[in-house]
Amino acid sequence: MIPENVRKVFEEHLWFVSTFGDEPNVVPVGFKCVTDDGKFAIGAILLETTLENIKQNGKIAIAAADPLTAEAYQIKGTAEFVTEGAVYEHYAKLAEDTFKGAYPLKYALIVTPEKLITATPNQHNKEEIPI
Image: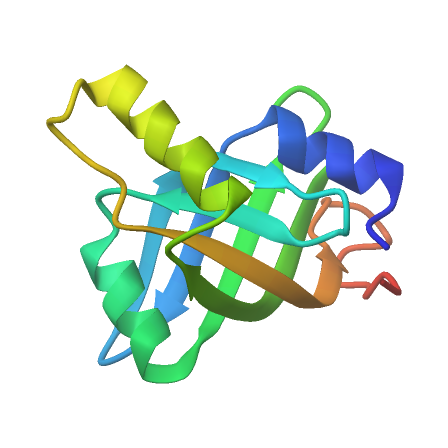
């Protein structure tokens, strides 16, 4: 399970999502949450390269940091596309409310974390946290 202090950093701060295909790709993501079961959910609206890369290999990394304390973490995992259910409906409504139809939701992504790594600049940097 995701430790509470790690969950707090991911819930309260912008995510940077990284994928790779023909070349590396990283984008900021604001439609996001950590689910109750410890997975990471993303509302994919304008993530064309990210989505193409995930279709190629399913791999994704997500980083978040608290800019005031420098507490930072990275997860590495596998993403799956979702086009129905509660997570999808939540982000579809959020996209509609935010962008008034200009940018509809393409997919929701559910990320299963496989590794959780400390990215805080201290003696624990690069340490893997059991999940």
